[in-house]
Image 1 (cartoon, rainbow, N blue to C red):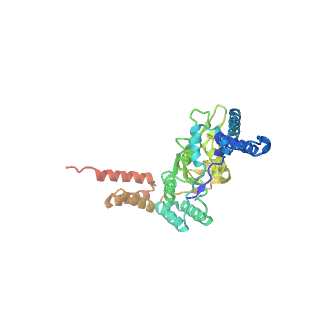
Image 2: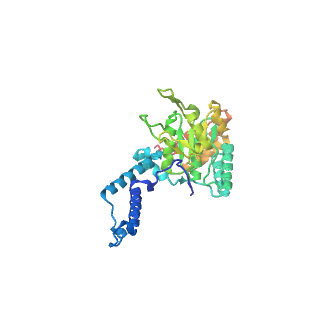
Image 3: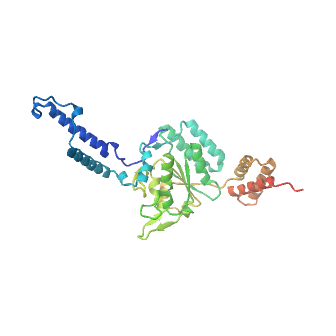
Length: 361
């Protein structure tokens, strides 16, 4: 897999450490002394010039060279913001110096296979699957080093697998996925991190996953964004999750996004974003301009029966139980009741418990 530049800052050059600099200064001075040894004006005519191995430096000159090498190394280190990090943070960022891996799609045929698998599992999300399919084929035609799709907002009722689609997409692509629950972590701290100085300062789940997995084009699902809250500091600064996503959803700004914790720029332009909401009208206009919403409808009775059959066979349920669940779903929808996937899963759990119960004597 190709390596994609991830760190947008310079790492200290090992050649500019105090030891190598001292060695270069010492060699340079020895070369000057060697030239003097070969010059008749700098040694008695009755003595042959010394060889390289016979030359040595006085202690005072050695100390001066060492001090100068230390000063030069310190000046060079101060030019890199990396040197101002704590040793444990430096150790964590050093492995990403050459870049991180990018997972691409080898061919348009493979893109068709992934799209067909998504359509088979989530047939009620036809518009979403279609956009992912075209993004995959476009990535192959361009020869991109990694697959990247435009960020999407999936708007629709709860319980129709909007979040699960993101996890499935990551699995099909072979990349890690992150499910960020906006309801439990409403502020931006959990996802993008917090600045040093806060009692709970940390990098954030996004950077943390990227540094751990070292894959550029991960799939991140921000679940139920409209329910996210915000936190205001004592100085009046607001930490809003939706607002913190804006620079990450724009490729140009995401390519040099600055982490609040490390205070260093990173290339997050390859991250694949899926945002789920129950009603996109509650989102801000700047966010919707970056991610035009896609409406996801309720699954039809045919979709629900098919889902129940596939999940029931995975659980080794009997054909009788699967048929009973299908008939119950069709009857409920004829009575103007709209079951969702959570209802189907509860019915499957009940059928599984009934089939596993002990026989009464």
